[in-house]
Length: 146
Image 1 (cartoon, rainbow, N blue to C red):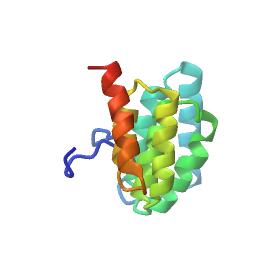
Image 2 (image 1 turned 45 degrees about the horizontal axis):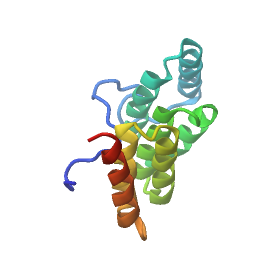
Image 3 (image 1 turned 90 degrees about the vertical axis):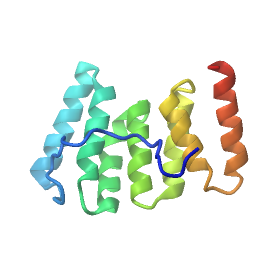
């Protein structure tokens, strides 16, 4: 696995709300909450969370973005994309244990989801005993999906 390419969930540039470098204010947070509520009703959370991730990655304060992601996604912990977003934002905030836990939670929800497998494998490698666990996880996936 190359060190230059991250397998944590990525989104295309340009979804920039709030604008790069801005922290969401009360109305912006309320807007994000409404957008997620609408996505829940419409059954489109799998596209809403990658978009939300991009918006939160535009915030200059990574810890604040991680905290906001946790609050916004709390109702959707059974959604793989929500967990992958949480993994990415925790990683960006320097919260490596939380990032690993979130990626593993995504993998538990969907063991056949390649993004969840790759994020888990990538994040596990820096944890104590993680290389062996990552190898087993990847091996299991490759056995099912040759």
